[in-house]
Image: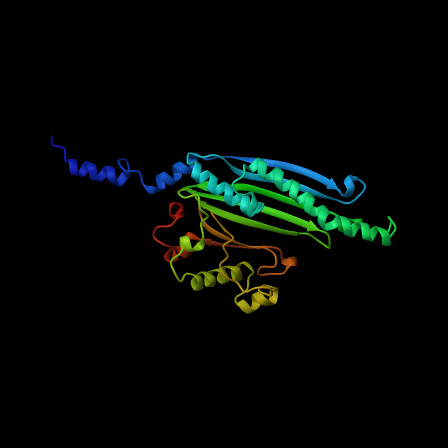
Length: 282
């Protein structure tokens, strides 16, 4: 029996046995990552007196412990260090960076507060002194929430209190391309000129979520008092599509909390580039 070599080669090419697809390479990078976290809890008081106001730190910082590509590993960790702690910590070992940040945070707190507290102490008795206003706290929790087909997502939740009525909280999402180690931006995913149509889709979804039928009705509820709606770079990817995340004050007042708007890949596929870092997900 004669064997048609052309037919066999074509079949092998189609199944990806001879030449693995880009998607296969992306999945390979996803599978090779191992992660870890640096944990830190610290409280420090003014004048090192536990009866005085103080500052507290609660940190859980996620990072890439090992990757097959060291350059990729460093790129991701440096981005996370920059977002969580500042550019001055880029390039440091995560454990060293967290320890250094603790020292800087406590020093900054004492520089900000100590002199004001002494002046207030002279004017008021210990009982009348509003010591609560001199307490600071910072919580930072980061975690990897998605790792599939070459896309890695990290969520960073922060809470800051520096005296006053209430603290501020926010969630930041970073999507990484595991072929390059770089953050995935909207411009990496969408064709030029996508903004108008994507904004329309976001408005339509937000109206549906709130059971209204117009932008004017959304404004009556309280949206867009601070800023109009536009596609935010603070989004995260998963198997279904995008979730655009707006923190408090971005498109709505504090009392309304953050806003999440989900957009499926099928909703925006016509707007997306043929080749993009998330193409393996849909």
